[in-house]
Image (cartoon, rainbow, N blue to C red; front, top):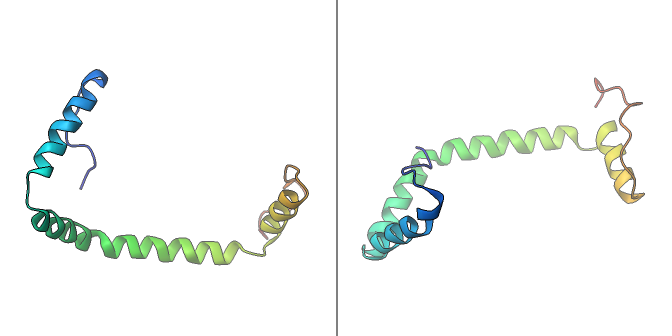
Amino acid sequence: MGITWKVCEPDQLMEETMKHARVLASKSISSLVESKKTIMAAIKPQIDAARDRENAAFAYLMGRPANMEAMVALAERRQPDFAAIDMADS
């Protein structure tokens, strides 16, 4: 599923957007809601899996040397200095 379905000149963007909005507005709201549910159901497992991977990576990095340097630097209002940190341990 792509997010681009039509290409137009920049000066035509608002006109094309409004055309599409009028078409959508003329449809039954319950049909649009059900269509959206169907689309989302197809991609929800991938979204959930991506969120799980992101959360696992975040949990892994929390408290590690690079994270601690970043947090201390933020509190001290300075740029972090990662040069002295062994990135294999970060």
